[in-house]
Length: 140
Image 1 (cartoon, helix red, strand yellow):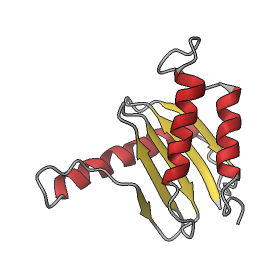
Image 2: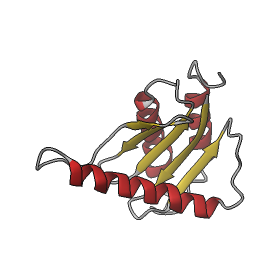
Image 3: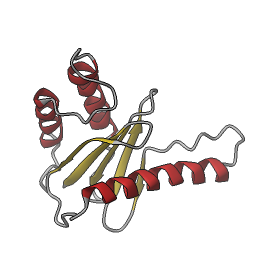
Image 4: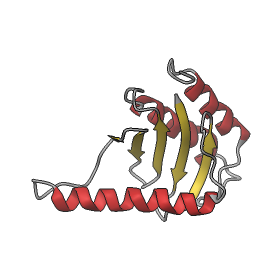
């Protein structure tokens, strides 16, 4: 089961949020966005600091808890994509790459979109919903 998606810019602003099968709805989404971005930022710092090699960049693609799996992709421009799912859902990196490509095609190339603004493009939302709902474990 796939729960929700966050897209952050490099400054930590949540550009896009969607949820599908989330049971525990947040009453303060702005606070949640700050917590999620802060956790991602600190996790990358921790991984860099504890890396056994000097050139460790703190990159990761997912982490697992008892209650969820966080799938993560960061673009070369620093846009962060974070999907939360049930722990049994396998790697969603291809889906995150698909969401990134949909963002480039429908948002970034849109001359009316100003970088850093929330994403309100209906075509992007449709593409995200199609990508996520096409996963075999979407509602399981």
